[in-house]
Length: 101
Image (tube, rainbow, N blue to C red; front, side, top):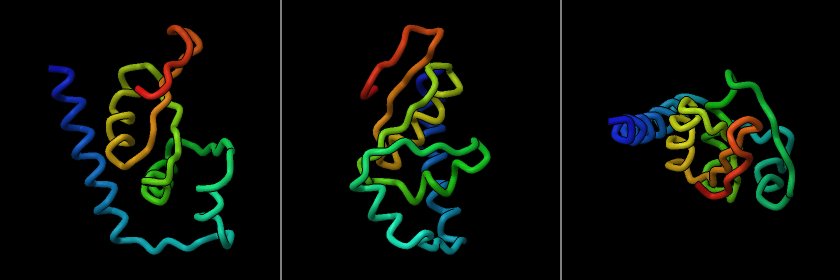
């Protein structure tokens, strides 16, 4: 039952982000940032409340996202995978890091 719930949330969440993105204007600020995130090795951080726009802007750009191994993280992982991101699951208390899950 949990697998079905994660699967459905992933599909619904990714489509909701795509639909929301149709209602906003996205500016390249600073100039060249969208190209830079595709060619630069870096770690970008932001607060959870600001996740939706980077999830849309960064889709399908060979970006890996570090996500908790907690079950709440599974919901985010399912959505992020469907937007074209790679997923790295990690936890300091649950066995370290697993790449490419």
